[in-house]
Length: 319
Image 1 (cartoon, rainbow, N blue to C red):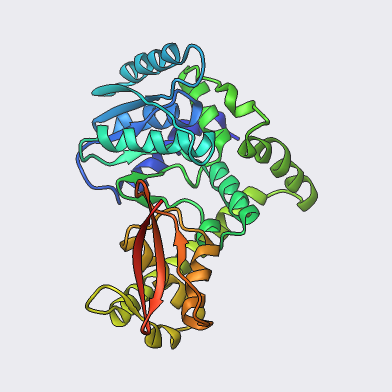
Image 2 (image 1 turned 90 degrees about the horizontal axis):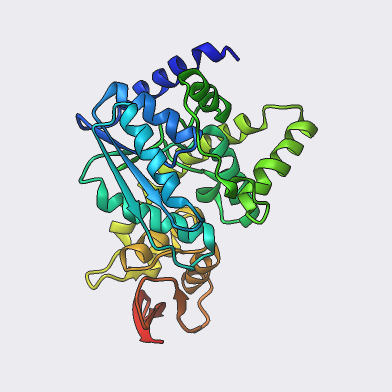
């Protein structure tokens, strides 16, 4: 790699992504690591930039790490900096809980501005492998979107080594998060054990291949989702249910997407492929079975999908 060209390469990537990002200013989620630090440096050259720094308060000295990132952001020309301290819960495990707290804080602080995230091609490859391991379908393997407003990932086609080279070129010292070397975390083991092994066995280029797979699947998924939106309108009832006779006539993949969209619109969340298929059997393998419990954000209540008189309906029951 020509290390002297790292900043220029990042600048081109962010400028190209910026053509699809509305607004005269933007925010950057800054952790202090090499990816977000290099992104902040380039973004601040292109538009007025506010750095949003999340202090998860999960490690000793996290406040000092956040303050270092704050001072770096100001030196890089950010017009504003906010340090956001969050409380990380336990739902879904430490990684998922931290991510949920982080995005909630960013959503509150962004003040309607778009937010740039420092995910790289390496992060995308790891996300695809995680999706494969969970067996949760094409949507999971499709990985992260480059643009999912208000979230934007301009470095999704860039390797992680380029952001490190950019920091060296700019004389920046990124924070080395100890969690990124902690083998207790699945993503860390993928990064340091699984991907290097795959690169060795398959002769290199695995991360790029996984990212290409994500792009292809994402394009297919978005097309099917658009078709599902039309089918949802055609199969819906005035009372908000779904006509099972019309649903049963749809191809399997399209019908399950209609069911997923309907469930989400009704308050479901964190849906699994198992739950969606169970609701689908209320349409395709109806034997008088009872309702299917699905995840929701409701407190002290459970959300169910059930079939009544040829219509899929949703109802709640107290926990």
